Structures are given as structure tokens and as C-alpha cells.
Length: 127
Image 1: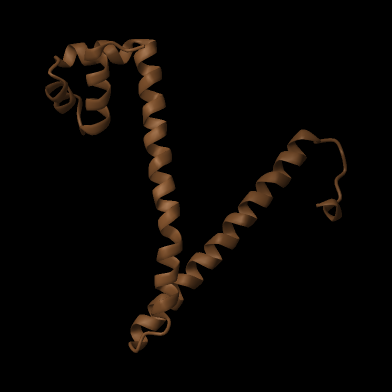
Image 2: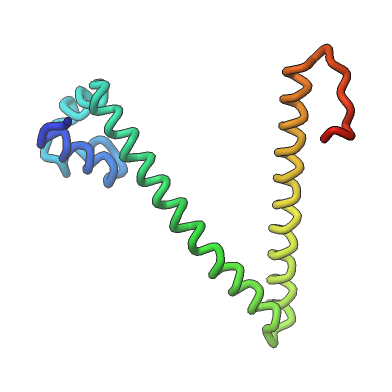
């Protein structure tokens, strides 16, 4: 459990873009902040909070994806041929990139199987 100054420091570190700015915001010295950053309990709380912020940001991005895709699809019907072409190109690029990522995952899985069974003869039909 963090004490009040540590809690202020945690919030300040998460919201400011430098240790100096975080120290000012938390009304603590830079030295105190650096001392907190060496404390295992503080570091653990900070890492947990950072992960929660990251997860929340990813969730926001994922929830906006459907809207972005709908807009791109809607722009395919634009009166502006340049806009249509740009939307079509963007959609196709993402579709191809998605397929590439899928292939990368499959190749990595195959490599892992081979790595785990180096002396065993494998048949690709089993994949």
C-alpha cells in the first residue's frame, strides 16, 4: 500500500512527460521520486497502473476500429473517384497485411514445432 506522497507521485508520473514535471506536480523533489522508483512496491504499483492505462487505450482503439472501417467502406461510394481509390487502396492494404500477419503466426507455430521436435520427421499434411 502506498502512502499519500507515493500515491501523488504515482499519479504525477503517469500524467506528466518527465520526472521533473512529475516532481513539480506531486510537490516532491526529483530525488524523492527517484527513491520511490527504486522501491519494489512502488515500482510494482507503477507497472500495474501503466499496464491498466495501456489496456484501456487499446480497448479505446479497438472500439473505434468498427467506426473507422464503416467510414472507409462508406467512402467507397463517394462521388470523388480519388477518394474512392484511396479508400479501396487502404482497405486492400489492411486486408493483405492481415493475411501476412496470419502467415507470420502460422510460420512461427511451425518453427516452434520443429524446434521442439528437431529429430522427428514432420509431415506438413498434419498442419
